[in-house]
Image (tube, rainbow, N blue to C red; front, side, top):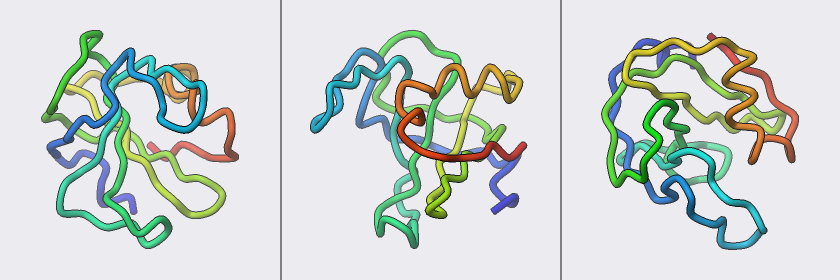
Amino acid sequence: MKSWLGRKVSVRIDRPIGSKYPHFPTVYSLNYGYLPDTFSEVDKEEIDAYVLGPRIPLKEFCGVVIAIVKREDGEIKLVVTDGQDFSVHEIKRQINFQEKFHKYKIIK
């Protein structure tokens, strides 16, 4: 899992900043998407990623993985930026809109 840290990745954004979650009353306060051609053993879909930094809706983003969000059920989500570093506290603050429903830890 830590092998993701520092890796350059491309994220396909399927929930751009300002969009609404399809099944819950959640508005995305940052760009959120997935890494094409990856696979998560937990949910059987591509690995998801939070994009921190850009404050405009995006379709794609290339950046560096600075942290991993590991949920209690084993699912991981990557935290990707343009190279900026964010503290664990700041990452938690920015992803809280979605992660407040889960128990998780952040790996840096």
